[in-house]
Each structure stands twice: as structure tokens, then as C-alpha cells.
Length: 132
Image (tube, rainbow, N blue to C red; front, top):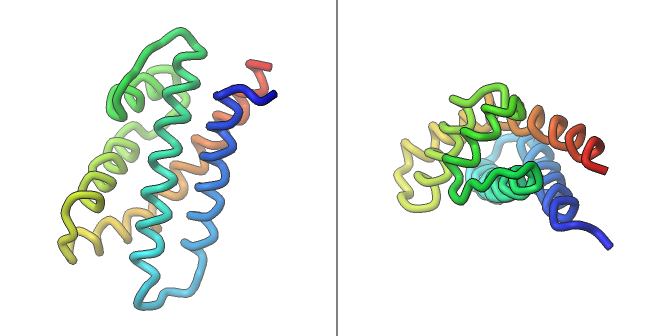
């Protein structure tokens, strides 16, 4: 039977794989919305996965910001600023749909968020292997 950590890691991996695929598609009128939606799913899966990894490591972090900061402290995240920017971007796209903000978030997803999430996923896969 799979552990909660393993299930969560698989959800993050699946969501990220979708985001990465969508990010590589040709840009169309609906590409920003599809990319942002995939990013929101990926980010949610990411921080919740991190939270479970931290609990497994003996640390409680109950919100995204605390979770990201602790993951950075443990060197699971190498670019804390990028992840805190992701948190802000997720909050912007979830609560306020300003066209300029959406455009900026979209460009950030393509230029740096996908790369940062990919590095974290790789690190978590390594950490998971060590937990086995």
C-alpha cells in the first residue's frame, strides 16, 4: 500500500508533467489560461506534497509560506524567491483576474516557474528514495 507521501509525490509529478506539456504547446489565445490553470494545480500539489515530506521529516508547516520557507531551509528548494513569487502568483490568479496580472504570471510560469518546479520535483524524488 502506498504511503501518503508517495501518493502526494505522484500527484505532484502528474500535475507538473501536465504543466510542462502545456507550457511547450504553441502559443494560442487560450494558452495563457490553460497554462495558468495547470500551474495552479501544480503549485497546490507541490506545496501539499512538501508539507507531507516535512511531516515525515518531523516538521509541521501548516500553510504554503511556512512550508516553502522550511523546504528552503532544508535545501530542498534552491530558489526561495521563485517559490514565494509562485505563491503570490497563485493567489493573484485564484482571487483576482486582472488581465495585466495574468499576462505577467503567464510569462513568469514560462520563464522561471516551470524550471523551479522541475528542480524541486527532482529533489523530492531523491529524498523519497532515501526515505524508503
